Image 1: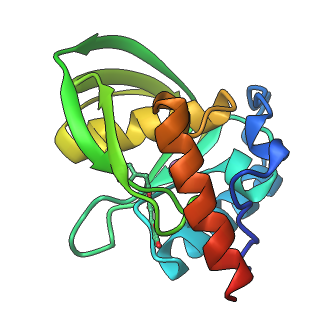
Image 2: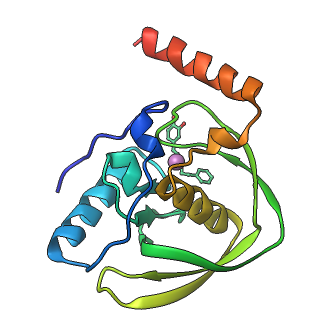
Length: 166
Ligand code: QAP
Ligand code: CO
């Protein structure tokens, strides 16, 4: 097990489009363990492989209060969505920056589990938002990129200032 390094916005590698996992091997399972450990350590509620510079379609999520409900999505696909939600988001790759993004309120997602079996999950509320946020990472998109140029520039200035003071 290992804590992986999380890429920090505006790292260009966050714009890489991930490719599907061809087969869920022990190597993939080992990566997933490290991703989960990294997410829990941060602590965060979601982490996409893109954020640890692995460009394969893998996501780990745990939105539970008890931090013991790990959800692993391999090759996720949204097969249905409905409603509109306007949730305040954050991101481990954009620390200290929070803001609203408009997304679907509920989603039905199809994915593979760590055993390589297909499953379908219906999600709402925070879990639905988190799934969409993490799937964006796999497509090379960071949540702040939904914002206006001005709001993005302000976020970037805040990040730069924080990095200078480290
Ligand atoms: C994505 O984000 C998410 O700024 C997961 O200083 C977040 O785990 C989806 C974090 C909210 C939907 C709603 C952020 C930790 C964690 C920070 C995270 C920070 C420390 C973010
Ligand atoms: Co994120």
